[in-house]
Amino acid sequence: MTDGGNGGLMMKLKQILPKDILGDDAFLAVRQNKRQEMISLKKDRRVALGDFIMLHFENFTTLWWQVQEMLRIEKGGAAQIQDELAAYNPLVPQGHELVATLMIEIDDPVIRRKTLQELTHIERCIALRFGEHRIIATAEEEDTARTSESGKTSAVHFLRWTFSEAQIADFTKPQTDVIVEVVHPAYTSKTLLAESTRQALSSDLT
Image 1: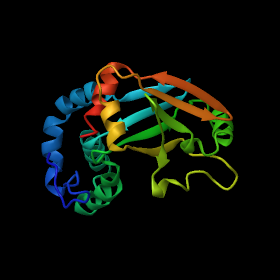
Image 2: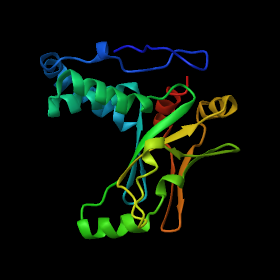
Image 3: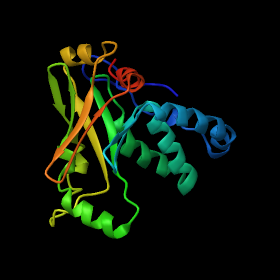
């Protein structure tokens, strides 16, 4: 895997390139070992918010894995590679931001449907607090239609927190207390990040 592409902000964009993608046979040969690596990697990038909201913080490697798994399952060939890269490359953190997949995880279909109706625009209500800073997540541009006209939200959202240089400096200081909070009329929760999670996310802010 490599980072490449043309950059803005006076830096190269981190992008998953076609040359980073393994063919079916090559991926299957390493998949089991890579899967164990991913389990370890994701452990420090997963944050529970209350009873049924989970944040999965993404980086180049987690998104590369998602692309490879989609190709393995759907077997769409070269055309699918371009589609998957177009879908997932915008989510690769670019050094001044954190990106996460928010998942609302409720098994019971009746309760899930009722809860999704209550959590209108939950994607606007997730913030990071540390030091004197509070950064509210923004939904991905193509994600803004994930709440229906009736107010029912989606079970999956893609979120981004954009940092200033001062915020990066404070977030990445060892032992900084970072709180992830949800403040929504139907759902409130606060979670203090484990230091191992703060360290893992700090690696995205470089």
